[in-house]
Length: 232
Length: 232
DNA sequence: CAGTGGTCTAGACCACAGC
DNA sequence: CTGTGGTCTAGACCACTGC
Image (cartoon, rainbow over all chains, first blue to last red; front, side):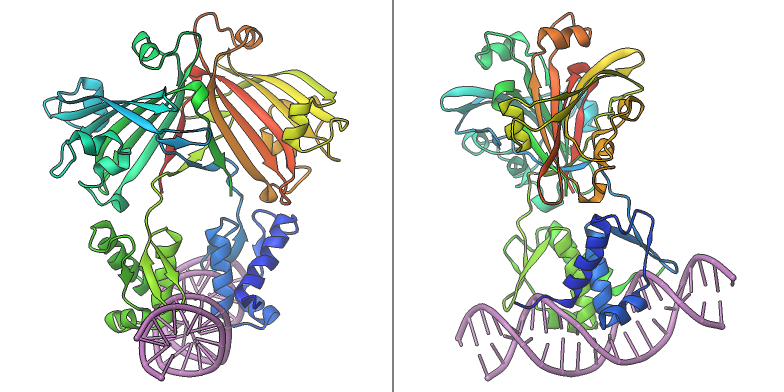
């Protein structure tokens, strides 16, 4: 069991930061000083510092030194997949509608296109154990190679629908999460008879050039979804 | 304007991945081969590859090579601060209650403590422009140095309440996000007279040793909050 | 066995801070 | 001017993979 020297450097400095010995804004001793302290070459020291910087512990100012960073207390990582979340996983989908429409002003604005441009609409219901748990609407700009065959659309995730038009690596995405009272149509589609809110998740996909490629809105029954986040 | 060699390596390989020339699972040419191609030393090549790995583009298998990674399409970054979000910012708070209680079974379980251990409860209302927008409850394990002076508690964020007990760097945090119908007490506290759902955000804070330090539950009026997430 | 990535060194030159 | 971090080199040895 060999522990690389740079890992020892990382642990040594991280311990000082976690324990409060080094506070945000404090300077870390210079790289040459660390070289002497750890008996290591400068490249090895710098590898350790690079890891601390990557993890948000420190930052550097050329010509001045390395410093302890103020942690971002508001940053969380959320894993969101419309087809599966922490308390529920979709096992069946029903395709309600696939259509070509002219967008209204709000949609055209959201997708940054003219209201005369065609947009594909896909409406689906997601089921778990036979119960409808979400109503899903997607708006896609048409691109060559896009799946418009029902079989391909029915079980696809948003990213998957666009993966044939754009390499998925190049996709940037945005989420908007909010709570809403269901309207009569959604109550009917999701078998909601009593007071039950919706958790709505809007997903917008962008090309590498930051052009909107599609908008997806998923209306989850409030009792079938929880989103989880973690810091780190 | 000098572009470092490792940046050129990063851009060259990233372009191949973004454009689909290199697909997930594909091997990247060996480091020695890249050395010849870019006329650079191996350490420089490896610095470029380290950046691509940090950004989730590639991974390496010792003895085999570097490979293109399948992107995690479900990962988002969310910035959450109970006092300010994308459509609203709290400008006034009212402290309803500060108390020492014995936790019920559910709370004791959540905080991983005995039901005979004391817990601090803090209940507050958050206001924006004079209107109540959120009902906030926090449960904290008592620690020496913890603020129990009203003045210190009233406007504090969850992390701030614990920052005197633990260096904030060492805190790990979890979020749970869901939609809920308000009960009569919350309707009354938040001036809700018609049908309006709550967006509920639970926040749990852990020490470096993964021991729960506190649980916070914030009930937002559905019309006063949207959470935003972004990929990358 | 040869080829791969992982670690590490002991130098070098540069741009920049601050005195 | 000295000291700092940023970049880069040309080697080295290691453990591992696959033939």
